[in-house]
Image (cartoon, rainbow, N blue to C red; front, top):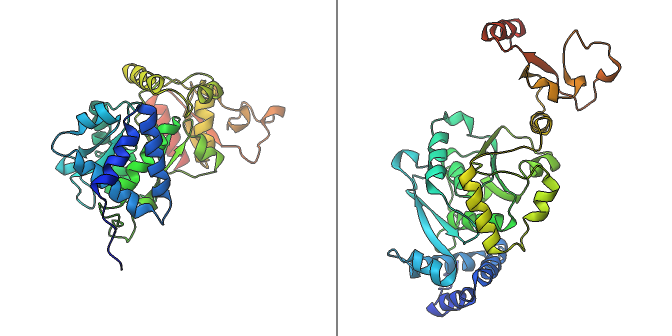
Length: 327
């Protein structure tokens, strides 16, 4: 196999020059690199370029890169007990100004995931809601070897940076694939998609085993309006202030109770769901299993119906119900 073509200092300087004018220019330059990463013929060269850029700003100069060229590439350090199957001590990530990074709650969230048993994620299909620059999706895939992780975010710019970060960690600085013990790379295990919450999975009929989400956001009650507000052409200042505002709120608002609950059940399509009695009023009546509604004209079961049993609020009654069902 021919030796990889080395990246020269002129290549690095040309890339930096294309980023220097503004945040918009830097985003355009990173888009161009992503297109090269997505093309197998130019993928290795694009990855080597990013590696050379990172080395150019080594020794704590990442912030200088951000101030001058409107992006930075840095390492996210993982605690020893959080390292994955490859025992990586760090992940490499690109950041741009429109993506707000709040490490405290991100790391707290990831540490929380690490408290779960391995079987929750191993060989499972997982959705990571509001994935941001993608490092948690990548870390999850690297540590637990799930079948697939779908990193989802409503911000189209975020998704493109997440893809770049995937390539940064799936390939080494020479542009060669990094294989795990099963002969797979992170490119086999992770995908990123623009999506309003779980819309991508719903539209593509993707069956999920697990959903995680570090969601420090207040979503517009009108999903269509939200999609129109946040576009790839939104200004860097708008996207940054929006993410900054979201971070302060730390609340998720679904369009309505019925959308949130019904949407989740339709996505998982369980054979049987036990739902708190205070929430069943938001579900289609034809889903409910109860002698009180049998025979009603509006309760005929459709093909996509989910069988729902009301769970009594009192714990002793709920235990008795589970005993009767013998799941």
